[in-house]
Image 1 (cartoon, helix red, strand yellow):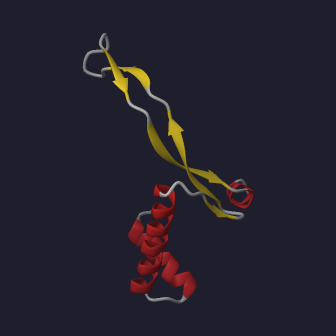
Image 2 (spheres, rainbow, N blue to C red; image 1 turned 90 degrees about the horizontal axis):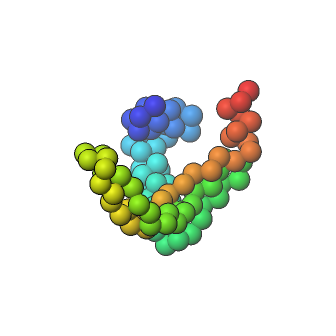
Length: 92
């Protein structure tokens, strides 16, 4: 499902227009992004949790020349952890 299909499904289920549903989806995504950038966690009980995790600096291999080692810098990675309710729905 792509964004347009998700917006159409949201509009259908909520009774909103597609334009309003897209605005709601964009607002949700922007709010989650802002929270993650600020180092906060977004918890939606029964659905899941959005958070960031630290990735340590490490050494890797150059894909063009596997013999050469490269340094991969430390970074933050966004992570989604599914909640119990979502896991149960998917496994039905």
